[in-house]
Amino acid sequence: MPKTLDAIPHFATEADERSYWESHDSADHVDWSKATRARLPNLKPTTTSISLRVPVALLDRIKIEANKRDVPYQSLIKIWLAEKAG
Image (cartoon, rainbow, N blue to C red; front, side):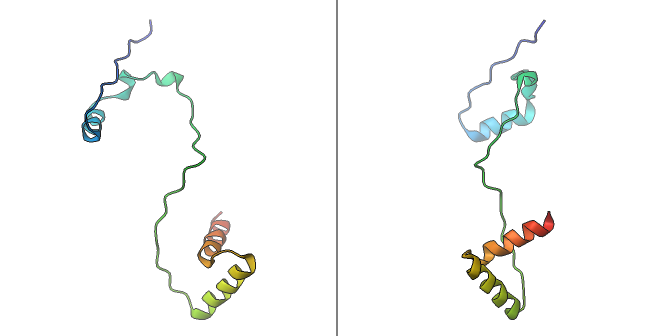
C-alpha cells in the first residue's frame, strides 16, 4: 500500500521554511521514487576572485595573445587554466 504523503505547508517567510526543513524529512512530503534528474543548462558557475602575481613581461605576452584572439586577457587565462586542469 502506498505511503500517504503529507502536504507541504505554506510558509510566511523564507526563514520559517528553512527552519521547518531543518527539522523535517522531505520524504514525508515527496515521493522521491518518482523524481527525475533536472538539467539547468543556463546556470552560471559560482566564481571567486583571486590575486595572482605574475611578471610584467609574462602579463604583456598574455595580453598580446589575448589581443590576437580578440578576447579579454583574464578570459584567456581562465581558458588556459581550464584546459590544463582538465
